[in-house]
Amino acid sequence: MINWFSLHLRAFALALRRLVAQPLGTLLSALVVGIALSLPAAGYLLLDNVASLARGVSGTPEISVFMAQDASATDIDSIEKRLRADGELAGYRHVPKDEALRQLEHSGLGDVLGGLTSNPLPDAFIVTPGSDDPAAYERLHARFAAWPGVAHVQLDSAWVKRLHALLGLGQSAVLLFAGLLGFALVIVTFNTIRLQILTQRHEIDVSRLLGATDPFIRRPFYWFGTLQGLLGGGVALATVWATVQALRGPVASLAETYGAVFTLSGPGLHESAAILGFAASLGWLGSAISVRRHLAERLT
Amino acid sequence: MIVFEEVVKRYPGGYTALAGVSFEIPAGELTVLSGHSGAGKSTLLKLIAAIERPTSGTVRISGQDVSGLRRRAIPYLRRNLGLVLQESRLLYDRNVFDNVMLPLVITGHPPRDAAKRVAAALDRVGLAGREREMPAGLSGGEQQRVAIARAIVNRPSILIADEPTAHLDTAYAAEIATLFKSFNAAGVTVLVSTHDDRLFARHQPRRIVLGKGLLIEAAA
Image (cartoon, rainbow over all chains, first blue to last red; front, side, top):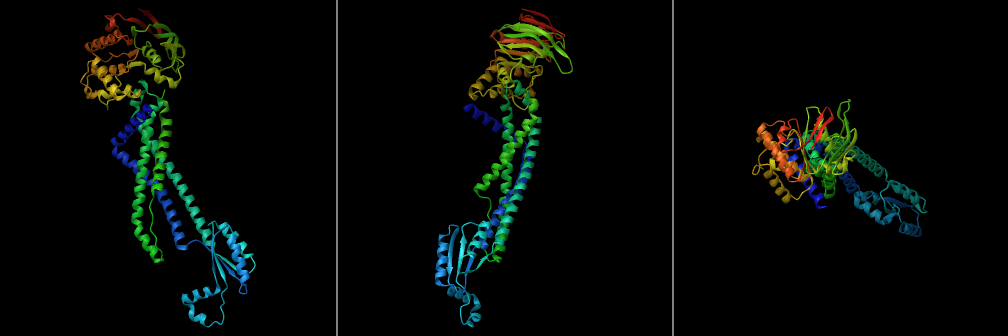
């Protein structure tokens, strides 16, 4: 086990030395990998921010259940009991017709309402569904509308559907993008390792004559690819972080014009670890394919 | 012990390098393999190191049949052989110490013990104190000595050398021959190919002579 660890340590050190020995090549590869990865990473963060912005601006979608004008207190109690017993709801709030009228008066329509002889508004319940699944909204809408004493159920689910569709589309696009650019990263690493193998051909041959096993020869190349991927991941993180810093002020100003307080958030600990892990894994994959392809004929 | 039984090696294209060669080299012998260019000397040594596989016949090293050895087992065979090739095949971007150290790195030797072994091997070939020098700054004979130090650093039981004196002048070549004799005196089985067997004559080696892929002479 100690020997295995020390062999890996040696391979890691060798790979690091090879990276440092070619600073320009290392920098260029890291930039190519980093810029390629920063695009899907930025896309993911953009989606995340849009989703939280939508939640912040619109709040949790609600369903308004309006009672009939002639609904009795018993009817209202009955509806309240049904809502209390409904397992699909996160909560509800009863807005009596008098309170609704007061709210309307406070909203600046006092003069208009002053001419009325009676309160034209019905009792209402503002219901918060337990799930933000558009299908659940439709189900609740149909159920409430069938209850006795309910005159109208207002559900603005169209925007929820649209938002979900857009976010879904965005996620698919980001995944597709990440897949394509990840493939590019694998190709970049594949080619770098191919060149490394050509450069190290003499050392590989000599090592084999001296009794080096296949894993001994392959290990430094695996580490090289992984480190190159990791460096690229670091560049991607730095690019995304710098972009977020640059856009944070303008985005906050834009949100303010809509009366919202919004701060563009950058990659957190989990996102950073995921980007670095993804980059390192792709680097390893590229090197593994390249080693398998180009070292096979030398391993006889 | 090295045993060849009716070994045939035919390369793709039809060229026959060895055409049914049989001999035995007992452990602890100094053997000189001679013959003209193209006689099959290098092929024979490559078969021992499993660099090539025989077309037919059997090659045994210390009782182990290496003709059909699994690829994964070949490195472990080579770790017990010291190989010196015609060209020194040193790594020119590493110093003398790192070149000689390489077999010990491959076998995962503890660094402190490995450093001692490297110093001892370099001392043995007369290059003590030259550890930090780069191979390019050494003469041809010194480079070959570094290659020999690298071959013996793992303390192999068999040392194989393919024309190690080919590019050296007579004085250097004689020194190298004496060096091989000293390893043999320490109990190592030494098999050296050369097309000038006079170099080893005074050490009274066992002789194997090849000609056009056939065994012409095998004498103690």
